Image 1 (cartoon, rainbow, N blue to C red):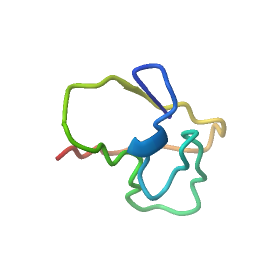
Image 2 (image 1 turned 45 degrees about the vertical axis):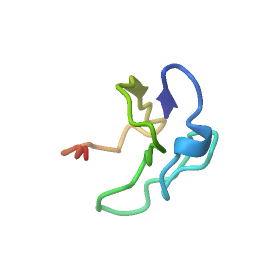
Image 3 (image 1 turned 180 degrees about the vertical axis):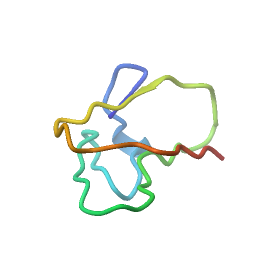
Image 4 (image 1 turned 90 degrees about the horizontal axis):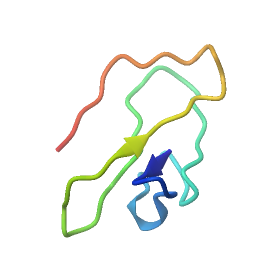
Length: 61
């Protein structure tokens, strides 16, 4: 996971570390980003290293 081309560091959610790495263990919602204030528009990238992972929904806000 990258934010604006960089690891999320302080903006990482509970399911990834500050380097942007995490593990999918079950079918559920994962918190990837928890952006601190000020909230601004960002570009994020997600790369799955396992071909069996599927994404069905993203929520923002």
